[in-house]
Amino acid sequence: MLHEILDACAAAGGRTISLHSRGAAEMLLDMLEFEPLAGTFVLHWFSAKRAIIERAASLGCWFSVGSGMMASRSGRDAVDAMPVDRLLPETDGPFGMAEGVPLAPGGGGSVYRDLAGLKGMSSREAERLMTGNFRRLVAAGSRKARRQEDDR
Image: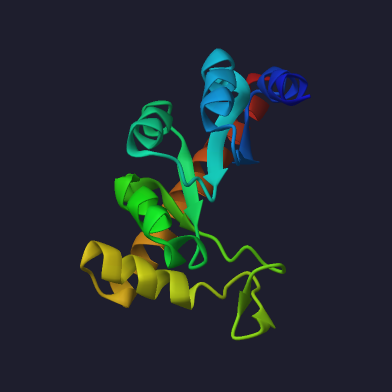
């Protein structure tokens, strides 16, 4: 099924695609490598080994991370291996919870604190970094869409 989706995205000129790969990281990367024109790939909660994360980064993937992911040592190790210029905040809401309350978009405060502690920066710097990353990702998609409209 994913092959068909990637083919359709490539035929449409590429899309930003959020993907979950639990237990199938290498297979997913094989598919993305086979269909690079499908778009920009955001890997959600990508808690793979460093070498696999490096491979994903070499394919141009982005990474959405949340506090839940950074609650474990393996999650922190994964986030630490990711390029900081492609990290995006992830609440995992409405299923993710903080103190018994469902998380919602814009509720990234704890991920900023967690990233700050991991990377040795302030929470404000982590928020600026991730917000800037998100803006770059969206702007790149918007530029691509405008170019496609101009080509028509």
